[in-house]
Amino acid sequence: DDKNNDITKMCQSLAEPLAECLQKERKYYESLDIYTEEDEKDIENLKKSWIDVIKEVEVCHPTTKAFTTAPIMEMRPQNRTGMAGFDYTIEEEMKIVLAYVRDNDTGEIVAAGSAEDLWEYNNDDDGNKKGILRLSFGPECKSVTAYALYQSKNEDDKNNNNDILYKYVTHLSS
Image (tube, rainbow, N blue to C red; front, side, top):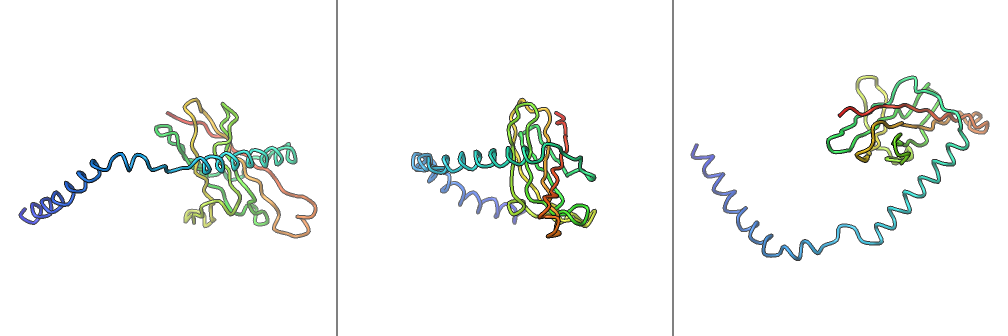
């Protein structure tokens, strides 16, 4: 008990001056911009670029194929975030090129990334490496569709344009 009291007193002695300092300098900390106007422009340009890429992918691949193994989809309606996990390789000969997630209610792209942009996750259950996309969605979203474009690893197949766009729909539960 004495040890816990000593730790509590020590933490209190350090936390109180910190809180006073933060309060005293509040205006300074509030004036700091996390994102500059230039950052906002970069983000908007990146979003527009991805929308253009996705339009082109969908024009070149008007038909889609259902995933043989569904991507991992975790949706958190409470804070309007989620993740989609895609196999880096499917059918042993196809590797992921890009992935994106679309809000089915608004048509908005809520996540997009190339194979290099995906956060790598090793799934111990099936031994396949997954690529994870983080996403956020609006309050009106009831379902999303996850898409992934895969391309043959075989150089001969690449020249014959044998890439396939896969899709998977999931509904949010509240």
